[in-house]
Length: 211
Image (cartoon, rainbow, N blue to C red; front, side, top):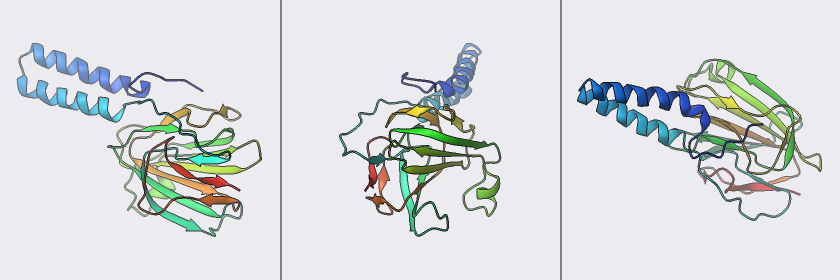
């Protein structure tokens, strides 16, 4: 697992570097309008790849926090998957911080990363062919949480910087997703402390507790 404590996420360095070079070259060539556009693009890239420090708030033991910034768009109970009783969907856009953070102290049991398209969530095929990553985290009490990150209309790929058997500390960074849907599956012994429409901040918003 990589540790990135810089104010800008390292996955954005490539885009920021190219845009900075374009700005310098256009400025040297006195192409003022294009240089201005490239400067605005540079500011936008710095914004979307920002990597702020987040203080982990003091929650009770067995807490689960949000792994992403975004808005809760659905909460379902008694879902078809027999291992889980709740499914929470969170929508993140370009205005949210793109860094993904561990929702609990746990070991990564498995990781499935599927490269693919980046269709809108309104497309009937988006859940089948869009780029996504599925993580299963297991804590010391054998509580299991499944997280699925799915890209929507994003110019960048999905970045996951952990591997199976890695141990994660609550709030630690593990990847970057620009514009997508995060689905969290939780077991029967979990108490959800959210409502549809809630705005979440990674590592600072409580999702709920294991009983």
